[in-house]
Length: 278
Image (cartoon, rainbow, N blue to C red):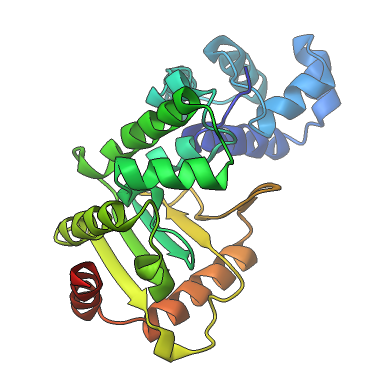
């Protein structure tokens, strides 16, 4: 079973690496000191494996860490071993995105083709999954739809994150699943936009060329300042996660410029309503 690191797991990995470097120890010296392989130490520091809290305690002892830092990191190690809701759908979700999304406090998403998965109706999602993934088996499609609907509970739970979705006008005019499915999806989109933690904007055709023409992306931000923002790009050839300050800043600027040329949230809802009536 592939391990999908959460934000907390990445935070723990960063802290362990920082403590090792603070002590001036190499990966091999740590491995020799604990009777581990060098590869294991490396995988712990890069969040490629889920470390046992006992292993973390051994690392902290080697690094001379004291309380309260030691206690907080051991507690963090215990926390990341808890199973997330998405583990019930490991046959559906690939990569780390859902685990990272689940801990976000803010999401900013641009898509020139589709409504964000967190705001899709079941029928719209079914049409997208069937066509986009070219899946003919009805049971597999149903399984993926169920996983997507389970993922959507993120936006209605206590402490729900903010979602700012910007899409091209083509997204609300493309008849995905047929007229009835699309009409219901647009009605649902209006309902979502009325919620305080959700913002929807449309980039109208009249804008012409703009900074979003290169493709879709999502920005994930977290409540803890120690956790860096992530820029995520989903593609048919695989997912890309960008965490460098330069890459994230570039995507933040791109999103700001896209949202600046988009219609206001109020005018966007008016357009959605107009298209639904058509």
